[in-house]
Length: 535
Image 1 (cartoon, helix red, strand yellow):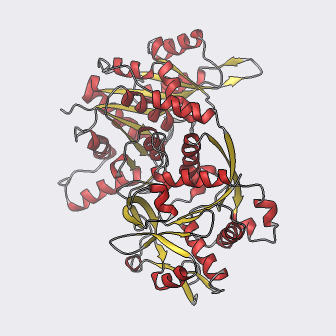
Image 2 (cartoon, rainbow, N blue to C red):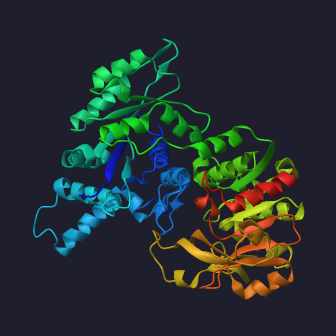
Image 3 (tube, rainbow, N blue to C red):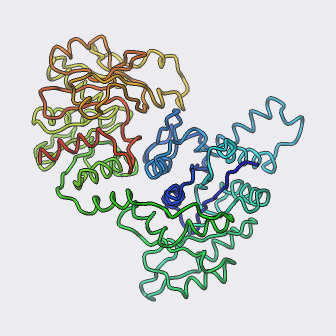
């Protein structure tokens, strides 16, 4: 038996209540008490991973160090805890069934009839315990996607039931639910929570702690009612009131003693009182800015802000560090392709970020945004496709190659300044086959990239198939666009910048994946500094 204890977080009544934020906040509190913690997400959908999902469907696809394409909640886990996640931290129904079917085809079940119980649930339990069996963590927090009562969640809830039985006091279940407020009656209503818990009880799982998401404070009377109807003590009914920032939730949970109740249920004597000095300092700076900048975020999925979740959070981290409030102006790239007044769109912004993406839609608008930033000396930051658009724009409007393009959009372009990576050309399957995860990069001294990082050797995460075509590198260098970051193993160009511009940076990697509350990303800090100088 390992030292690891297991905490399961389920949801009821409605989706999007913030299970990921509650899980992350609990992890912050346990970590602040001196424990080691990791968080994993079990997603009920049948996709193997979110890598092939449209961002409008699922929001951002978050990439881990080891190259796993995962749910955006893993971004919250890393940003809150500053602990790397991995392939083992995100498991989908698709991955579970794929594994079981592969085992059946190999004959591993020796002729058994393969069933949801025990074969699917055994595989779920195995995946949950992979992280715990390393003895690296005191706690593994497992968030179950969806809501209790969903058909697709049933095998996961059954697996929790079995693990609760098998692990006894080494497992605890937190159920996040919703307490709606009926304005006409002027009352908070507990009935949806009661029904949600009843649904869990019907599946054999008794929640140990109930966290109540609410817009209004919960009275002692309401806590008493939930306690009575849901078979838990009153001190295990925890209020989670709406907060101005998700980063306030750990402090709210500290006041509500969520971590204390979890340790009590697991029969653990707390190591020490939590030290959240750094967290409180971050919140103070966040809420007391000394200046303000507006950044235009140019993308093709801007109607769903979660499609750029890590970028938005990176702005918050960097902004708080600099005590600078960052306002995002959302710009739909497709609209820029029309005959619009670019000055009217960008004259009130202090910086322009061209976001990542895939496909033809909106790319010409992104290129026009790059051109505006370059010609008007507006601080510019391009990420992944944003960097590629910067290269295309420079080729067309500085080098004079009017038909320059990426072969992703135009296979017949006479100037393929962005081309598919050689090792990608023979790949047919779309899922999990891009250049994914962390790769090293050597930073050229004397560049803005070096000024930001203050080191020559860095490592950043990637998610792409296309790259800067090094056949054209000399022409770019001769005309003022410098390759400021190079992969030492493959010589891929990882970053470009224009030395004569106040701030013009394009990176092939995704710096937003590594920004943290405790460690904001240096490129976002340098970009916000440049934008503030342009305010």
